[in-house]
Image (cartoon, rainbow, N blue to C red; front, top):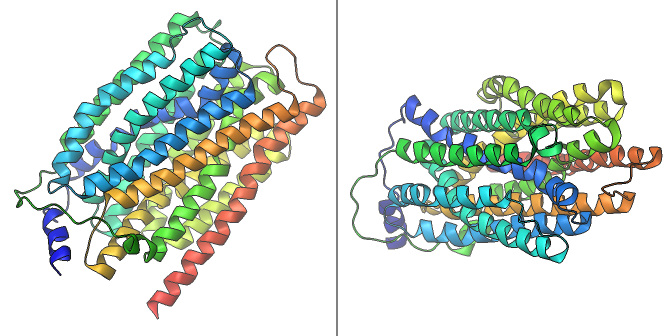
Length: 441
């Protein structure tokens, strides 16, 4: 009882609804976050292989190590913030101090030191690890803050939808500058890349600071640290465990699709603008679809929304696989489904945290957020390594054009991996639905 009381005192905040202006201000942080995240997701592997001559397998290793390290940092940070008596104050301080550090390491990465071979590999790995460590600090703080902005299922859906809307705007911005990364010679050379990445870093800092300023102020609380989150709290939270498995499965397979666009544009379509068109289509379709998903989520259960989103995602991949005439339409349909999936993953996390609170009388936010980030980033890192391995297997090299057979294998790889992932995700959503029905009885 004393442990539960301490947890409640430490998390005591005013539960009245947060003003919509504050919600929008908080959600705007996802714009800056996704400008950086999308740049690294879409172009880190490509920059390493095509500009700096790193082999696809080694480049995939850099992507994987960076993201997995980022994910491993998250649970440690989550446990630390959960022990703070003033979590809201700690979230704000981490965002104000950490955001500039993230921006600096991001911008530095795209400054070509002129080294090649083993030296450029070591340099890239070191900068990526520094960037990911700083990014992890801000990511945990920003995502944990969502749990204070949304204290009901409907509010969670609204905040999650707003967050993903700003994420789509960030991805759309990155898509607009895709040629700067894919074909820098025609986009103004290396100076243009430095300007674009520098502006991206400043945007990240500005939006994270706005997000921190939008956070509600916590009341004065006694100097009591919240108890450590027991392992039983996590292991006994069935919705959380299933959600973590779902997050890992989709992060391992679905990003593979968009990460392939730069290679398809260069090696198959032979037009750098195709990559920008595909990424723009993906971002726009997600942005346009979000209001519809938010409306649907208010009318039917979260599990049903997840199932519909996965079915739409799979249909888009199947359409993409039918041929060149329908590839962009397939990208658009994939984006529609992916918007619903990503929105509901974070809305479901809020529900899982509330479930743990109801079951145990203790509310933990940092650790569940960090565990979800760990699964998402670990899956994304392994996805990057998988793409690098796949490129090596089909024989991708910088100077040699792909043969027709190699191009066909690249296209098949681009849609078949995420399509298999949707099947696995369906099974996990079914498990969530079965648990929900059993708990209702």
